[in-house]
Image (cartoon, rainbow, N blue to C red; front, side, top):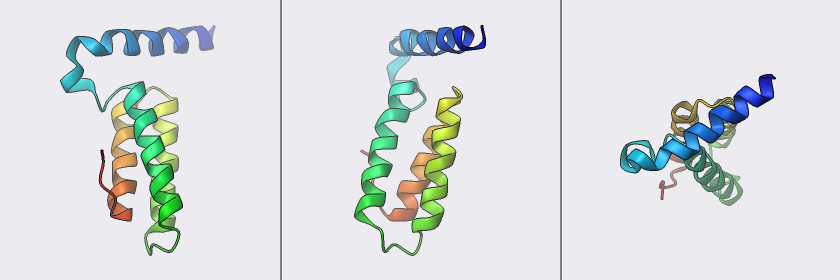
Length: 90
């Protein structure tokens, strides 16, 4: 039952996201996925960064928040990871 409710929430978030795409673009499941890919690439490209460990922690926080439907919090942590690595959000 818990998973059904979570799945319904994700479907609703994704389904209603396009209604106001400019305001919710970064705070959606697809925003989380895009940011996760960017952070993964940035970490792979910057293993010698002095901020690598902290950026890796931020990646984990982003993953956890996004997995629990808190997309804006997740995107914010992913953005912090990119900032720590000196990478630009695209």
